[in-house]
Image (cartoon, rainbow, N blue to C red; front, side, top):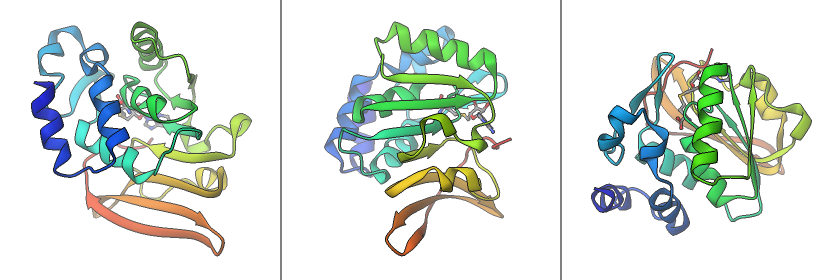
Length: 198
Ligand code: SAH
């Protein structure tokens, strides 16, 4: 099952470190027990509170777009199950992940503990405000779709930093921001389907 998923991802993702991280994180440990058998399918799954764990291909693409090399400090908005944070955690030095539902954050903490992930700091709160205490970040991942990228997140992006977020205006697309010497460069990419950023 895992091999089939990895074969699918390989058609769209070239970053070998990202593919290895997906292979290494047991997604079955991040979904409700009764859905564990579907955990290696390339599909989103319900995780409670009306939210979903993202599709593995989208997680892999977003990680690849952030061009992670290993020493980065990363902000993740929308912890959900903690799965995306766990994949990021294998690719970088440290992840700060913010979730507005306390129950989901508590479950994510258990999932990360159970899978031996120790370089993720969880917080409950409004992720559209970022995480000022740990800013700036080399990379920012947003896992819920808003009409625009929250200004606070742009401000917490370090020089050279990358941010990836689903943006909804008529249709939903991944948007990549890069803080270059001349300011923020913006690229609109493939269509996606995320739950709303509240
Ligand atoms: N990355 C998650 C899935 C994310 S689903 C995983 O791997 O499982 C999107 C999550 O964003 C949901 O859990 C939702 O509650 C959360 N969310 C939405 N708006 C938010 C906000 N303003 N601040 C923090 N979390 C938010």
